[in-house]
Image (cartoon, rainbow, N blue to C red; front, side):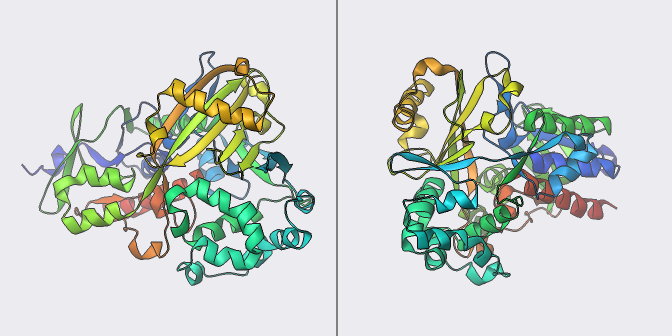
Length: 444
């Protein structure tokens, strides 16, 4: 049954309350549109969602920060009254290699990195300047990271510094990742340095959860609605027009629709409403999951915020001690550490029960920090995100799906669309606001 215009409940339905969906909803609200946001999870924020340890300390499920040159985060924060709550903090970074921790926060630290010859250290230090000479990312999109990077920094520097990180980050896809991903990383990170060469990062007082809830409240104040625990299970449409989505609470209709989950989730939602060619295109984009152990400790592991793990055999891409970035005073003087691993769901570790994974992880932590003892652990949580990292293979721009769907009044905006940038809150916000403007133009 085709609905009349008077039967339609909302101007726009947004599926997903990550930062793409939240920013789109707020932009549409400010334009006077009636919006309904439907989120399968029980809270806003997506991958930047938060949880509480047993003692009530709240923290992100997955480690997060912003860069001090991000533009869209402070713009949105200002719109919800949190513009003055963003703090810029120095970042202490390092590398674990060959059984030793090396500090790599400044150019001088790099010159002291003895595992590389002096000439390789110098070449590594000049890499950002050489990378900035590339103005058109399409000129290197056909190359893998190794094919592009190894001639720039040398085989030994690539082997010691970059290859372990790329393999830890991209697992079975490491050799297929486009050079564009790494190029953009280096360009962006090079712009976050202070006058002494140290990196400056940004964070919201109270964390990302506070930010997401502030957007939620702003959407509601503007007369729209956000519902949690509402997974879209079916679509109703006819003649190329989507009429409504179905969730456990019923059928919800709108004039326009925006879908923000990962492409495989969208493919499942649309089901038979999308033909085989469209389904294949959506499922062509590969993803890695993330398995993240969050430890609450009674003392610090080290003085490093972000410790890259470059030793083979360690199952983590990094050891991120959040309270070496944001003060432990903000967490009841507890220490919070993230241990992150990217993997496919068929990796046996993905299915480990939480206590078994903790036991597995502790054995590796003790190798890196011999003084560590399980008595330090006050609490822990393990989080799994199935579609954490879109895989940008060589030639990605030629196969990544566009924003269209089989329905002329429904569009897609996902983290896989932010290319050539990598996933991040700043670009999720950018994409959400851009999607909102396109929808608004169709409604006016």
